[in-house]
Length: 265
Image (tube, rainbow, N blue to C red):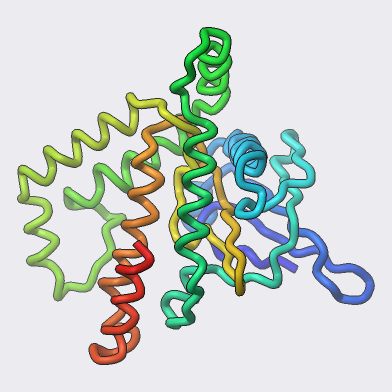
């Protein structure tokens, strides 16, 4: 059963003869799925995703999806089935609260970013880390991050989608020179500070949750970069939910949910 709802890949659930979903198979396409063949994309991202998740699983197995098999020729990854979980983004929008989720996300980030950091004391460890940095060079996906995080929002661009009522606010962002200077500084750090193996796209749409459980998925943006990028992406996504809650729940009901988001952060 094809279940993928993301922008990039095909995702299938594989059922046994009793109709029970057992494993998930994910295959990368040579283009951006949500756009089509007009936006080609390297298949090597499948290798980078598999290797990132395998590395993160070593340090945070309780919060990382388990990869059972990877086939580089087919750009196919076989992973554990998470049918008992739900995508966190949808749960946040529906105001279904998982009180442990933010703490567990913090644990995932702490363990993966600390244990893959490049600040080692011995020369042998440092050389090994340099080899790891080289293995995870990810130019195609970093280019997408560059566009979507650091470039597009601050200029007129076809990929910027927003209600016409926000035009004045969007124009104010485009005209905010101090903000754009600060963003340029963050962009420089993203490309020049190889501190740890990042997930690279750790928002609520890349996280499964259940009662007492949280699992990170979708790590094709894996890359050695500044620790603050993963932490900031996670916090920023929770802040986006904070901003959108009055539109989903109404102003009065949103107040308590907003307090939960601030507590989560």
